[in-house]
Image 1: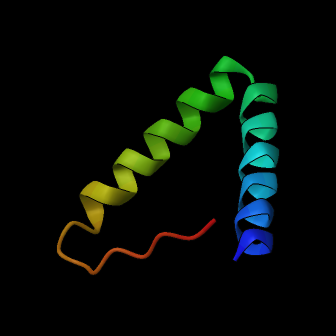
Image 2: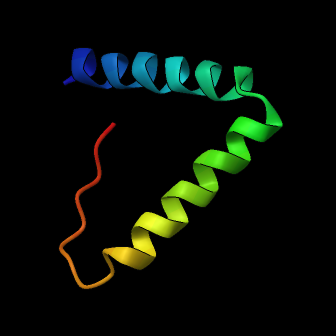
Amino acid sequence: MVDVNRQSLIVNRQWLMVDSQLSINEQLTVATSTTTAINNDSHQPRITSF
């Protein structure tokens, strides 16, 4: 159990590092794309992937 949690924290930390390296324009593009996808697929089941 401890090992699984530790691995989760490592993965989360890596994603935070990736997020912090994105430029503002890239963040806006990702946010816009995500919002558009959610709006287009609002009638579909949600699938969240990392």
